[in-house]
Image 1 (cartoon, rainbow, N blue to C red):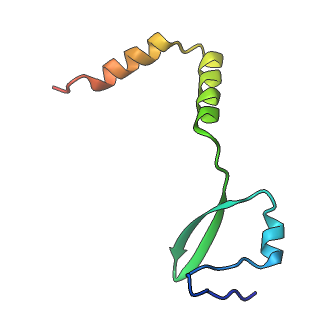
Image 2: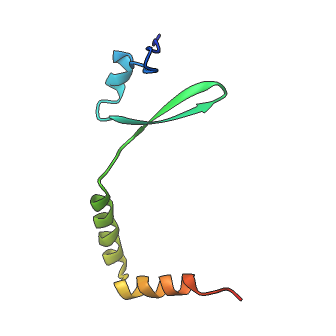
Length: 79
């Protein structure tokens, strides 16, 4: 498939490629061996991630006190 770079440095993805990723709006772009690599990325709101973390902590039995203690431990000066 062929794609042309516009004067504004934009590329239009061919329809066949877009069909393969119907739910993807964002892509991570990298270059490897002179090849452009697009990886679909799912963006979730920050509060959604936070809620998921809180749910997992609750399932594991981790409390806010446990987190505070861990932060205190991590911030201790090393001798």
